[in-house]
Image (cartoon, rainbow, N blue to C red; front, side, top):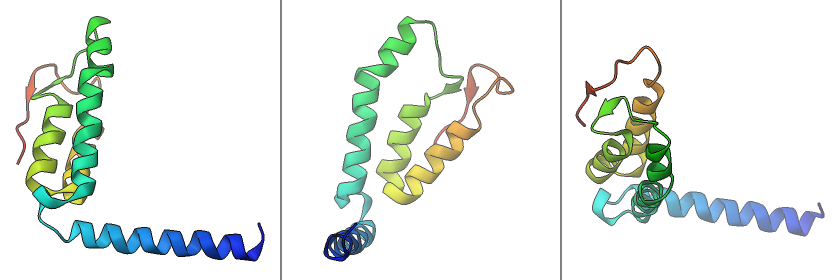
Length: 105
């Protein structure tokens, strides 16, 4: 990659890092990153989740992982909410009994 193109990409990456840092410093209700994550969850719930449910797949937790993710992102914002949601998903597996009640913190 020629140097001017590389410098341009480094500049763009730096601007994005600064913008994301400024966004994460806002309250959760004002974070555009949280809104983008919540939009992705809504899209998942409207499409893939319904298709998985029709095939017989069910979430082992109550509330479901996507609803849990929505709740923690609303409450804590994009960074901490995503970490909590990913930790919840990581606990899912055959060792988790179906119907496990695990409300958002």
